[in-house]
Image (tube, rainbow, N blue to C red):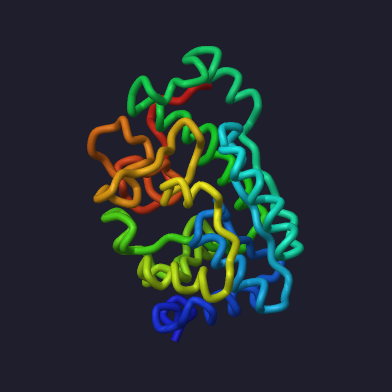
Length: 241
């Protein structure tokens, strides 16, 4: 039985333990400081082996997110690696389209996500043999087919919480007293860039606060799925070069 096949039958703790012991510092957790990502950090810290944690600093993050960088350092002794977009790309994009181009059209928003998130992630992943995310199947329709262990772009992508429910996330967080991003207390169940994230209203879906001005669509940035919701990272056809 392959690791991919064993993954579906394994618990999140077992998968994270396997990743830390197998890949060491060639394994990293992608952390946006949402509850799922913080659970992964907590699980990995219990293994006792080396691993890395990084976040995509788009330049437009909430101040509370930077607070979480320090919280992780204080609680777990982990220095979160900040991954930045290419300065030249950002300067050209904003000079041509303005700093808040994402409000103008879906294509412009996808371009901004590509410059600030997708391409920096691709560059960062070149440092690793495996990486983990907090994706869960019940989050959105686009994520319903996520596997716990996948081979993608020449490396292993690990989604240990793929089959977890929201109730399981809440229970683990409470039981282990995992640090929680301050914006959750203000009604933010999904946290991204400050201009593109808002609190949700009662009855709205978990991802309703992401790019809320857009009508329909998968509400994805392109990191885990192409802009049309298909599996695999993608970016809009129009590029600012």
